[in-house]
Each structure stands twice: as structure tokens, then as C-alpha cells.
Amino acid sequence: MAALAIAYHGHWADHGRSFNKERAMKPYLLAGLFMCMAASVLGQNLAEDAHVTKMLVAAQVGDLLRKSCPKAQARMFVVFSEMLALERHAKNLGLSDAEIKTFLRDPKEKARIRALSSDYLARAGAKTGDVDSYCAVARAEVAAGTVVGSLIKVAP
Image 1 (cartoon, rainbow, N blue to C red):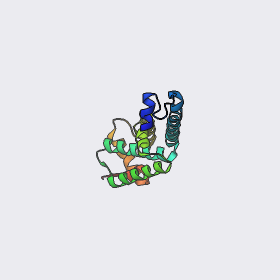
Image 2: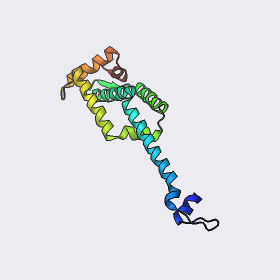
Image 3: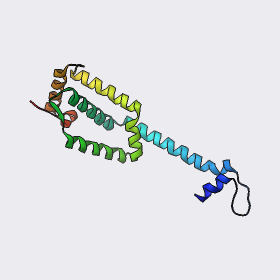
Image 4: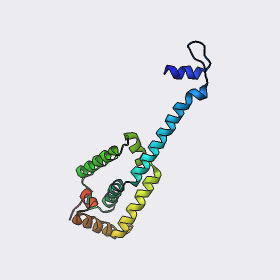
């Protein structure tokens, strides 16, 4: 902290030596740049991780089924367990809590997961505005034992 205060004031406190701000700050700027680049690369790897994408799509599909089919409910213990497992997976890839949050809040990533989820539901037979089609997909997911099916339960 003292070094930053000295740098800010533009002189060395000892022996009256002159101070070159650009030269003194260069290592800090380079370190900051490398940290940003590393975070960017890690974020890209997280977006490209098949397991992360699969689980985020499953969570989004399960949530859409729960909201669109009145007979479907979230299995909250399973959802919470899977969320913690996914967080552990991301941390094992070397990401910090802040990097994970940034990734999950990224509008581009949200849009990508929503698009993949919509495609998944359309391929499974869900039709926008058709409650019965969403309930049929929910029942099929549970019966097939898919990841989505493990996150929800459907009343008869």
C-alpha cells in the first residue's frame, strides 16, 4: 500500500530518487492484463464444457416444465444437490466463486442456454401454450430417467 501511495505522489520517499510512473506501474498493469486473460480463458472453457452445458440445459428445461405443467414440481433436494455438484465441477476447473457468478449472469450464456432448452423441449414435443404437451414431456422425462426427469416429479 505504501508503494502505491509513493507511486501516486510521483516520488520516492528514500534518497530523493526520481520516479518514473509508467515504468513502475508496468508490472502491475501486465499482471492485471494476464489475470483478465486467464479469467476470460477459464470462462470460455466453462462455456465449452459439455457437462456444464448439459446440466444448465437440464435445469432450465426442468424449470420450464415445472412452470408450464401444473402437475410438475421441482424435486428441490435433487436440484440443490445437482447445483452443488455443478459448482464443485466448476471449481475443479479452476474457477473462483466470482468467476462462476459472472459466467452464470452473462446475458450471452443465458441466451445460449435458453435457446438450447427451447430446442430440447421442441424436439421432445412441447408446444408453446399447450399445457398437455408440457405435461407429456415431463412424464416422459421422469419415465426415461433423464437428468431432467430426476429434477422434477409429476403428479398423476
